[in-house]
Amino acid sequence: MSTPEPLKDPDGKPLDPAAQAVVDKVRRMSMLSGIATVLGISVVIVMIGWRLYRSADSAPPAQVDVVATLPKGAKVVSTAVAAGRVIVTVDVGGVVEVRSFDAETLQPVGRLRFVEERSP
Image 1 (cartoon, helix red, strand yellow):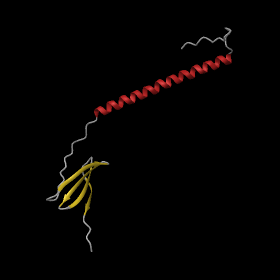
Image 2: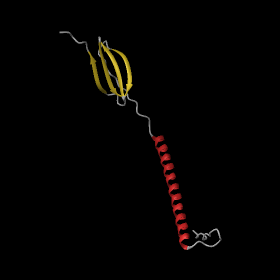
Image 3: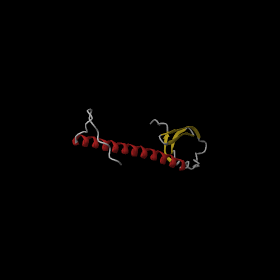
Image 4: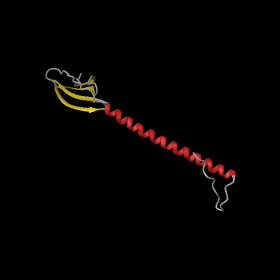
């Protein structure tokens, strides 16, 4: 880089050495700020491109086939999906059961059975 020509005050006289040093320091600081800004923007653009490139390589999740056996005479009343679970309501001979499965693996997670309260 070539050294910049010394600045002159409004009267046309060159600045004194202390003022010229301040001007040079401000120039260096603004150049460093510009380099840091360009570097930061470059990093952001590279990261966005990298994420887009990586997402194109990801494969869709594998298909999972699961067979859940129900007792004889059972009927599925309703199904729902909530909080990463598949919820199935089943009527088994007049007794209502709620069975829950993990939404990703379809493995059984829990079972809730409703029975009538018997009077003493």
